[in-house]
Image (tube, rainbow, N blue to C red; front, side):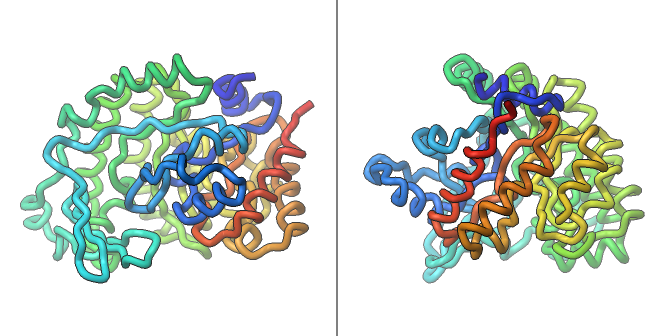
Length: 385
């Protein structure tokens, strides 16, 4: 099978020839740049020919080398919207830090010996109707966002065997993005005592993403198999918000976006939600989520992947959950890694509906031998027949 055929069968709950694999298909299923270079060196790929280009600057994610994709057996590649004409990512030297201002007007900083950019200064300093009205919101209709995308997607579709996974998001999700423009303390306090303003912010973000997604799908919808949307509403041990708040204020907005994606394309909707989100999965299914990611098996309620498959496997596809990436991939022995990967495959792969990923981005300083052990174990157990 080609990668595209393999993904198509799996996301339609049919068994392909082998388990499909994602590394670098999205901004939430890739690998940190240091771990990437360590892995390329460990595999004896010529470092002189390894690109230092980044697919995503905020999380410092590299453009994955096609040689590594072929060695692993990766089946997906990304297609993302362009930046607007009114903004350019300019990274400035600020002494011990690198800084840049994102499309939303937030300043991000990264220590020069660090691995990620963090949100540091916010354009909305006080949550109020006045500040919302005065804030300069991004323009989703800027033609630069989609310029050349159709030709790019068509070329990738016709010249490669890979499945295309795309997104028009240029920030966090509908619930997540407000924390990136006003700070998480101000935002979560607003969720408790200033709901009308918080709801107004989320509504503006919803309208922006609806328009950006419509424009994006008009260009590339015919070539994509999966649309990726991310929105973290949970922590390691439980929800960030109450089920009541989610169902009243967030869920209807997500549904509008998911309905649009299904209306404008044949793409399946992948929802990325980290943490302990088990109790929200029926809600996600109800509003049109087809695929869940990352399946953080180290989070409360998510560790029993056999139960996840039993409870939800007929309705959704599991994209991730291939290993406990916080403890076992990072610190485990080869035996622990092999046992863990085999367990997750046994739980999630039967009947299709499973794309292997480590569960979010592989972090820097994960030993390359651990990564290799993970993929070698997958290769020994990936066949369906």
